[in-house]
Image (cartoon, rainbow, N blue to C red):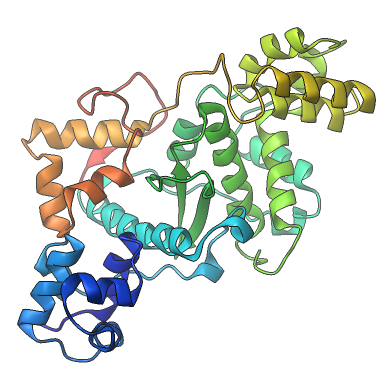
Length: 358
């Protein structure tokens, strides 16, 4: 078996260590770490030192080459504010997440992706959102559970455990499989919007390519706003909004933040510029700038509830999954953190996501 330099890099990035920091921790030279990551032969004792320092099983480094998630294939939000360590740790989580879903795909029939190419509509994100809603037969009604909807349409959703607000969410295509990673530190309302934002990237920027397009983030935001808060429904339900109190009552219909709803009302010309600015100031004073004091319950994953329940019925625990993947249990739990709800044994009452054992 050959030591994998790519796997060493993934493990190091998950620990947010530089090559020199890992070398110091393992008691080897920085040159040794650099050579190991670049494919040079690694002695068994050195491999053990590196594995112990990173807290990964030694077997992890002798498995086949991992899926490397390149930064230019990922739609990162707020990339300018993100540190290189947080960016690399998030991408490394993507590599582990792909391996986890490969493991699940071998054992269960997950829903097939049902996305359409809307790259020609990228300059008209409102139109793209409307077309996808039509494709999925959603009409103009509110979406009860965004996460469950995405899973039912074949998106592979996992969580990011990075202890930072600088990483919102990200998405990428791997062959014909769409992946979304969500930062569970965000408010539940923000997670709903992030789901829709990443959905916008996946349908509008997969074929056209979002890298280098300065408008891609604004396009995805506009798509998310229109997808979550359809124009016809907003105009029907939010007529004559004049107070913040009215906004706070209405926002629960679409499960969005108060700020997001106010922005949508302004975008649709339903409130004046002065009213929009006044409401933003008042919401900020009430604590709605970075949080949602009367927030909704966090959405949970139907797929992961069902997968974990089915595995538990066969006495297969998360520890055993981690051992088969040769990763620390903490890394597995980070990938599904909060997604399966308070109890991984509970199926949940959502329909629409078909899941059968292979």
